[in-house]
Structure formats: C-alpha cells, structure tokens
Length: 361
Image (cartoon, rainbow, N blue to C red; front, side, top):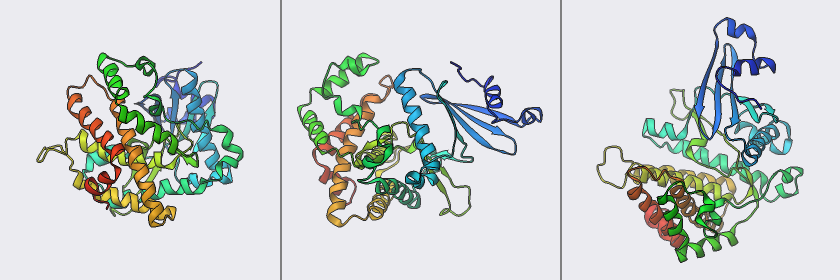
C-alpha cells in the first residue's frame, strides 16, 4: 500500500495521467500538505486546474469505508441525475484509488474554510448565513422521503451518531486519552437527566433524507474575492459521515458552531479582547434559520417543531464537542464546564434557549 508524501505524489499523479511531466520541468508544479484526520495535498499544475488529493491517515476499515463513501457521493453528484443537485455544492470528482484509499478532486482555489474566514474578518454576514441555510435545505428537501427507495440507499448504514451511545457501556470503550477524559465521560453517563434526554432523542430520530453528518464551519469553503460583499461562493466538503438520517442533526451542527465559538472566544466576558459576543452573531443565526425553513417550505408549526428538535440535538452536539476537546488545554475546565452546562440547558429547555438566548421567540 502506497503512502503519499510530498516527494512521491508527483510520480503517483504522472503514472495515472493527472500530471504532465513538462509542468515539473517548467517549475510550475507545487504541492502543499495540509494536516487533518487524513493526509491532504493541494496540488498546483501550472495552467491546469489544481487538485486536492486525500488519503486516509490510519489504515483501518472504518476510515477506509468513510473515504470510499465520500468518493461515492462526489461521483454520484456528477454522474447520477438523482444527485445532480449536489454538483454545485461539492467539489468536482476526478478519481478514486480503492487499493491505496486515495481520493482525487478538483481544488477549489482562492477559498478558505468558514471557521478561518470568520476568525480573520470577525464578521458574520447574513448573506453567507442565508446561503448556508439554502444549501442544507437544497439537499435535505431533494432527498426527503424518497432516498430510501433509491438504488443508492444500500450505500448508507443509517446509523445514529456515536454520542447517542455514550450513556451506555464502559467509558474505556470511547478511548479516553487521559484521566480527565475518563472522568468527564463518567460525569455525563451518571447524569440521569442526560440519559433520559438521549433516550428521547433516539426515539425522535428519523431516517428521512440525505444528511452530511458532520456540519461545522471547517467543512464549508468560502470564496469572496469579489469587491462586492454579496458576491461569494460556498462549497460543502468532507462527506465522509454522510448517511440517510435526520436533517435536524445537520441543522444542529450549525447552531452548535455558533454557540461553541461564543464560548471558545470567551465572548460571554464583556470587553474581553478576543471575545465574540453572541449578539454579534445573532443576526447571522436568525438569517440561517429563516433561509433554511423558507427553502424547506415549512409552515409556522412545522418550522417551530423542527427548530426545537434541532436545538435539542445542538445540545447533544455541544456535549459531544466537549468530549472531543483536548482536555490538556489549560482553559478546558472553564470552557468545558460552560459547554456542558449549555448543552444540558438546550436539552432540558429548548424553548428558553430559543426565546431568551437566541431571541427567536
């Protein structure tokens, strides 16, 4: 099995016809390796369009299957009429090497992920938030209620996210990295209210449409090179956790992104230099939700039911984020405690969170 490096990737690409040797001779070949849970390479090929090449970092079956699923989503988007709506949302598919677990796609140039965009600009344009809602609604509505009958349904496992099982089993099953990790999992497991909320959430879960499964700012690429703030493009990447599932889980990911950013930056401390106050993001949060519910065609009652369910799921996702944090960080105790409390509050009183915290009464 070949492991790609910055030294050998040029040979790999030439052997498969994706790189003209003259590009190397002319000095126009450039690669940049990015770090994530997978190996990733940005490849620049002179006048030819760039490539993004992705390979699993750990060669276990679960990660291999996840990358294969992502490759399949991209292939379907450009080859299956039932998935053609995704063509404008996902990167263009080029090639998948099942033997070496390598996915090759079009490089979306001059783009940065939304997390870095917000950190750099310290602005949360409502136009971008509205487009986020439109994107989620587009693939949710397109596959609502009919994907289970499609030939592609066999590709999906229809599994609940792992956090829905955290209330059961030995904490060691969740691979805690430290004593603090172990104790935190125990704390969550021993909270009777949380266990009840998880059970209720399981009962409410509906496998009704295609979901991304890992919605967060880092998985959206934004290009806003135009001088016009209303001219930009968005792409949704990293479909490794795609499934037939509950659309509210994707919506929850967006709410979770805003709220954890508020806590991470200590925006709850008035006057904190790096803090992002929740009030600064509220217009964006509201714009996202209004756009999503509008494009889904919800009436007022349906919209409210979906919103409250999504806020409960956001509470679960916030607790999941807390469990996934690096607990060696010096500020974990303060931020982690706040995140846990916020997550529990969202599970327990989503109406209060909706009306009092988010002002969406």
